[in-house]
Amino acid sequence: MSLDEPMRIGSISADPGLLLAPMEDVSDLPFRTICKELGADIVYTEFVNAEGLVRQPPVEHRRRGSDKLLFRDAERPLGIQLYGASEFSMETAAHTAAQRRPDLIDINCGCWVSNVALRGAGAGLLRDPDQMRKVVERVIGAVGDLPVTVKTRLGWDPASIHIVEVARMLEEAGVRALALHCRTRSQGHKGVVDYSWIPRIKEVVSIPVIANGDITTSQDVARVFAATGCDGVMIGRAAVRHPWIFRDARSYLQTGRLAPPPTLAERANLCLKHLRLSVELRGDRGGVIGMRRHFAGYFRGMRGAAQLRGELTRLAEAESVRQRLQQLAESPQAEVPVIPDPPGAPEAATPFTGESALADHRA
Ligand SMILES: Cc1cc2nc3c(=O)[nH]c(=O)nc-3n(C[C@H](O)[C@H](O)[C@H](O)COP(=O)(O)O)c2cc1C
Image (cartoon, rainbow, N blue to C red; front, side, top):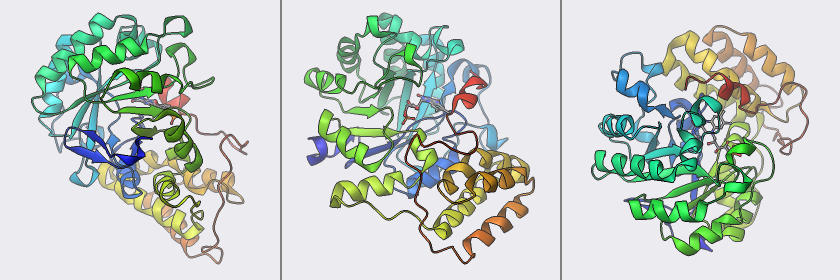
């Protein structure tokens, strides 16, 4: 099992590799900072459209909230993720992104959404490995000494899974790590993840291979490491439901014991911190709006969670949200651990799936 050896990507070393997945509209600077503090080893920006970046390079410190390339040193190691179908725009975008000096550049070869994949970007590149290679080589050529990694899926559909050959090609082209969402493009975010491809890939490449898809608990993390020999695991939606997963999983891997669930005070205080970061980035109004998708995760499992989420979501002023969170942090039940619902448990209100964020993303 790879837990014996740290995962290395260029000069980045992680032991064991617990990564926060790139998520459009979710893995922004505030959320990344929270996950980092809770033990994520590597975090990624939301995906950045290469064409958009080429047309209109963002100006740092102006319209900070909309500058997806913005990050802070406290988040390091951090990867900027780019997507695009054309090697020319990807090359230029990679050059622009590299000037911000992230720790790595990641190429999105896994996005399944039609207006990305059907235009040849994201998972669309899985249908054209020659084009994928061109994109990868141009990006590597554009970023100097920065490591370039790829995040992809098993294949376009079950009839076209060529991931072992693709992994070999990517390593040959100079890619320094591969993250694999163990579903095909045709599955979207549904259906069974098939981790059995990871050991097959590991037989033919020596770059780190990172498993992704439906890893929702500390026990899942341990199981995936043990069953696949992967070098790292990447966690997306489960981190939104429970940002403590990085801390919990690390402690479980080290001790074999499950961490006690966070108390209401811990939940409210972390949410307060997240709110502060969100307001710092986007101002009062934008900061509050940016928090709305996170309230469910912070208070999951608590009696009256759906009602509380509704209440917090209706508050428009950062100060009102702050006061309500403060009240929770100081309430008589504040020190009582709140046991999160098991993954997949029915919720009183709409669960977070990410589908809405993906449906209206600006690709
Ligand atoms: C709301 C949302 C946004 C996403 N945005 C991105 C993205 O920008 N780049 C990317 O590579 N994957 C993106 N993904 C896919 C995730 O990185 C991850 O591969 C997927 O959610 C499976 O992992 P999980 O089961 O741990 O969530 C997104 C997923 C969700 C739910």
